[in-house]
Image (cartoon, rainbow, N blue to C red; front, side):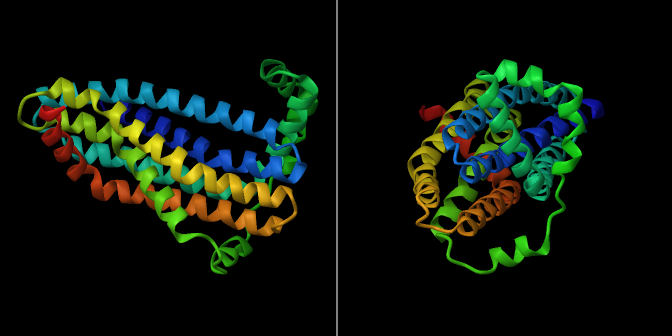
Length: 265
């Protein structure tokens, strides 16, 4: 079972790292003036990560079954390890952001030339293309942190992004842990993760995406400096990291809340 927890943690790390790095693709689209192409790549990354999240839920369900048959197994503690992997993946993505902005710019250019994502992926594995990857590596600079201290970013946007990230991060695990708690409606509780993630998606679509789109549009029209939108993405990534930490706090309460409301659904 240790191997399964390690594998699920690695998958969670990759999911959150990929979702956070989707900001670098948007940033590359703004810098190159090819935002529509960049958004198609962003959509692909998010779709793959969300689909992987479903696979994560299936694999984690087997851990719950194991815990029910082995009462000495610390299910909550192991779930917290998976949540910690989400925080680590987000932190790694923040460190890789400068590098992936450069790589994403090249991906946007290759997609424009290739005309389709399968052809772009095929061309991307050529030796001469792979050889150029190290040239795009950029170490994170202290200036990134200094920019975050400058202010001028909507606080409500950051708070909402952190809250939505916390809900996404904890949704599947809280629903599965609710099935482990004493009481009826275990199957109903396990299926509630879709409802929770659906609520988070609605909040993301209504409250966060439009504000980010407006700020992005201002940068494209030269009404806002490129450094300002760079700072916004920095704050969005930082709020995502805070959201994964907040998921640790709400994990157990969320599981009990799910257990309480399932009989009324």
